[in-house]
Image 1 (cartoon, one colour):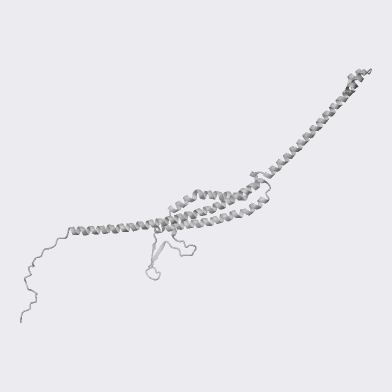
Image 2 (cartoon, rainbow, N blue to C red; image 1 turned 120 degrees about the vertical axis):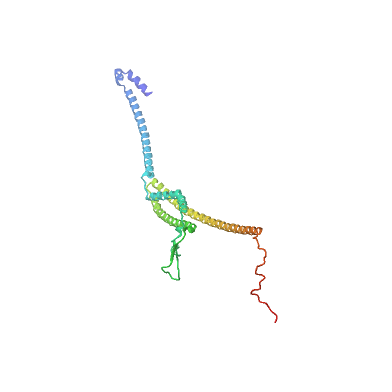
Length: 295
């Protein structure tokens, strides 16, 4: 309303028409108002943009912090991981080839494997030869003969399985001790890990150690079960062999008895020819006889 009144007054005054036409004071007021309004809007917009920029910088810093905490998994190297990898590879090889190697070892048993073992020196080992003495003392005339290894095949197979089980038991103890030694160091590294990638790898390493320890124990238990199964199988086979030999003995005895009975029956059916009584041509002679003559 004020603006309109001022415009009317300015138009009524003489000599003001050209001036208003050139640059009206009212127009200046309007332009100033518009400029002030534009500047106010720009200041508000700038404030909003500055707020958004600050929020974006805050989010960027938060993301940078997260990435720093996570770290780069590829850059994390732990000596324990290589040890665990080697142990896992060994377990896989045992699982894949252990049974076949054992079976081949049993097939190739000759019996000579039972000779020479003295059970850690607790007993006297059996040698492959026997010395036959010709007297109470050893002399040059004593005879040395070789044992027959085939008679010891079952015992040799059991001995080989026991020796293999003993070696695996020692190997398992060494593997578990080696893995257990890594555990304290890994736990210490967890508490001082610089980022989540390292923590994750440390956790994986600890879990793998636990799994490998359990796998080592299970492998040893499996070997003991294999030995027990072989032991029971050999016992059963020995019983079968004993029964078979007893049956063979009975069959041979029956066969000999049947043959003897058949021979007696044949002899009874065909008796040998007997000679008839005859008088000797010298039966009437009294040569060489002692006679009693009356006095």
